[in-house]
Amino acid sequence: MTNHKRPPASVLFIFGGSGDLNYRKLTPALYNLFLDDYMPEKFEIAGIGRSAYTIDAYHEHLKDGITKFSRRKGEENGHWNEFSKNVTYLQMDAEDQAAYSVITDLVKAKEAEWGTHPNVIFYLAVAPQLVPAIATKLGSLNLCSDKASTRIVIEKPFGHDLQSAHDLNTLLGRMFSEEQIYRIDHYLGKETVQNIIALRFANAMFEPVWNRNFIDHIQITASETVGLEGRGGYYENSGALRDMVQNHILQILCMVAMEAPVSFDANEIRNKKVDVLNAIRPFSREKVHENAVRGQYSKGWRQGKAVPGYREEKGVAPESATDTYAAVKFYIDNWRWQGVPIYVRTGKHMHQKATNITLQFRPAPHNAFPTESAETWRPNRLTISIQPEMDIRMRFQAKRPGQSMMLEPVEMVFNFDEQFGDQHAPEAYETLLLDVMEGDATLFMRADQVEAAWKVVMPILETWENRTPVDFPNYAPDSWGPEDADAMIARDGHSWINLPK
Ligand code: BG6
Image (tube, rainbow, N blue to C red; front, side, top):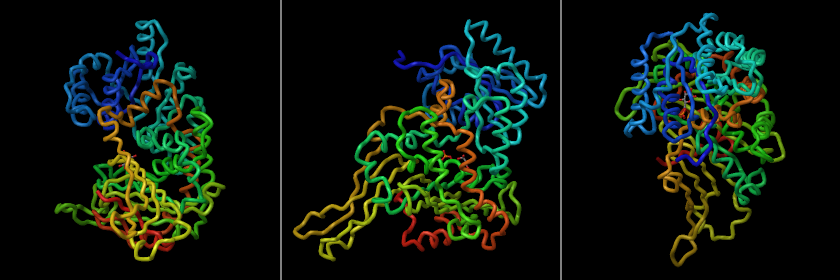
């Protein structure tokens, strides 16, 4: 029995229905929502693609994706038949306006069958260059003028730079109202990322110290051990700054740095986040090299296995200047954060897969302990691990047991799995798809947010694009990135915090 509300009847059209995102993420997420009784009582999912599939072959393909990638892959798929009755496939040339009548026909048929006008959701899980054409063709359907029930979901990357993101916003704005547009950043759907809001604003003890008076600096790391995973063609035109910093990392930074929202209203939360982006100190081009470091991995080794260098990957130019690592130092010019450096870094083929945030506190104002007792003294730290570890740890000093007053840093840890282990945490895409069906845009990016985030990274992108990196490749696989990034943070008397595995 369900004890929660379900979204209203919905028809979902997935452009890119035969593609990788649907196979690995979207269908497994929708199926998990179904198993957890979160799908609408009446729903229809239509995958749209160019490839030819019989309906049985399409179902088999999707089921295979679930077996391989769903968080429930180990479980019996007893409900699959029930679910897949509501999944269809439309082979369609998305470039052909006439072909779009199948969409209207399907919605009309479902409306007649269900006796209610459903939500109509268009999910564009396609290459970014196809988005404008598809959105324009959808825009000419009468369906899209229904602002309350018709929605469009756009995957990242949203634009390639500030200008193209602005152009895409303008184009979408001609056909859809802002309330209909759901720009995805899947990091916002992660449980541990959403928990930042709970930690900060559902507790009274953190907010009073969450500012420049107590915090020395902040670090955000999103290091990956994977390389390109066959995405050379995309990545070569993107790079780490575009792929991770402009979106995921800046979104995390917003959640860490935003002011307390007055309510959970989608626009209230997004206003508070955009305030952070607008307060990030702009870099002059001359200052980019002091505040940003780029890297590219060489060939090397990981666990005894040879790893090809980035420039040897498929789809990558032999002299490529694309960054596979980026580290940036930001400042936020407002009352709360003035003077507090925020160091962020991300990279492919790094030593460890870890996304975490550390707030390092200022030193205690006076050390009354004898020098030898404080040899192991360390500043307080609050570390929020997003993935794969999911915990929050507070480091503080304790007296080591014994007859002398010796101090030692210890940790208080809250671990998600230990605390909530028996309740399966939803995957980010589950949360986000449910929100789209419910019409809750809180965890999606508004037009101005996306543009503000591009504005932050533009001077770095432009400087990097105009200056050929002379030292590429400059870090080895299985390392912690280029030495210049260590030097950047060391100039401020700090070092990158690498958590033990
Ligand atoms: C995607 C990037 O947005 O996020 C990928 O395009 C990256 O390059 C991925 O690997 C990381 O996501 P997650 O959820 O695995 O941290």
